[in-house]
Length: 432
Image (cartoon, rainbow, N blue to C red; front, side, top):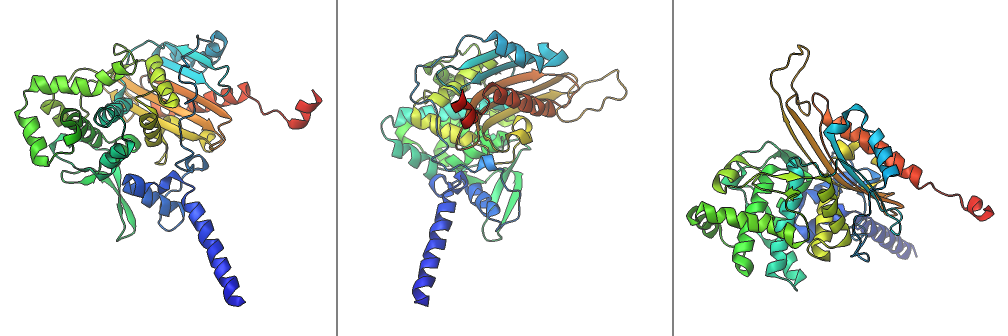
């Protein structure tokens, strides 16, 4: 009798543990080859030291999905002037230095759109890495239009080795050491290996410029070689060293600009023009990059509808944007802790001589240029998404902490969306 009870208890514990192990997208390491997910899972379980994720970051992989797949024909609605006026108030005296678009999808039958300076072009910075991901997934779709398993196999099985294209970058990525049961944070080095999926994650979750340049290199190879990809490092090196630079520039545009046009986006309002590292730009000359909040909104809306290439590609890009790394900038405000946040940001700042003797040049405080860009899909609460909205924002506010400015706006926009969709008490509703 005791033995049977013991076995039942053990089985119940096992099933509970199994259920918990499937309760987080952090448990996607086996499917994707993204090793940091294993570390994050162990941290969440208290088996490894580290910062645990907030409630909004704990959705299962199946719960991280595109939300408007049944509304493929949805377009941006006309600008709601009342909604825009409320958003504009949050910008105070710096309105001319902001561009912002907000799409409230909480009631998908009646979406509301606010926009201010939505067609003003600014360098998108690291937000352009979403375009790199688009280029890679488009190349996969070209090679395997009807074979999703083949696409997954390429993402999982392709081993990417960091080479001279990564020079130089300071962004740190997570390396999981299972033997020592610890996580290390450091920039990518020449010789570092990971799956193609892992490099995509390093590019988007840690915003590694080195990883972005390796992903872009692989996307170009995939676009050129098609089903023969992946090719050996020797073949890849020969291709980049022997192909005339003019042809490489054309292939670069075909890899990351043509897909935007193919997917109905305006290349005059959104473009990633080059690699993200100095060496990458030397090896493959490119052009300038820019974006507007309106066209970034169109990009994010296409992801949510499954219209960016196809459902598979849109879903995987959205999963790669799901915040299971440390939340920063716009995504870091405590008001969003219960929200699922799908996020990318980018910053560029520059300092010069200043007549103010008290001015100190530091990160995100540029006095010549102080760009900060944020794109975010918010679902609140996570798993329920009673509130559902998209924000795209760029700014160039000099001599202030632009990361804190975006964080504060995140809170104000979130509170506004909450007020626009109050929770109705069931008894009150019935009485009415």
